Length: 142
Image 1 (cartoon, rainbow, N blue to C red):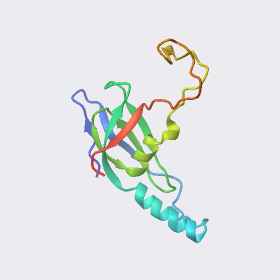
Image 2: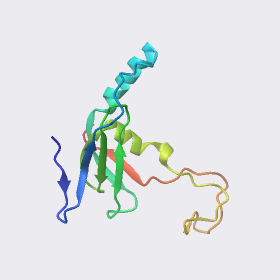
Image 3: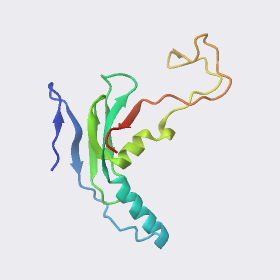
């Protein structure tokens, strides 16, 4: 049983919906035995529920609404996250949101990006730089 969280204004957050997956769980039967064992272990770890605080670098009024379903047969879970709130979520979702590959890099040679200066003097960067994260989960219970 899931308890839906709501703000004083009535905005739902946390796990707001769960939809059955029409793709059936096949137990990784097409995998080699060693990969099957590895994926079963990974699935168990990714489905472990952890407590984490959601942070958004753009401020308290921003939200992250996303669907999460990593493995065949798992239900499709719809989440809405509010910055500064703590949530009990699957570890796989935390890994997905915190994945460094989701951060867009700042490319060399650009004078500005979306109207924001790259450097104070508006000069282009000499090499590619790592970008800034927007969405992040911080460990509070794992």
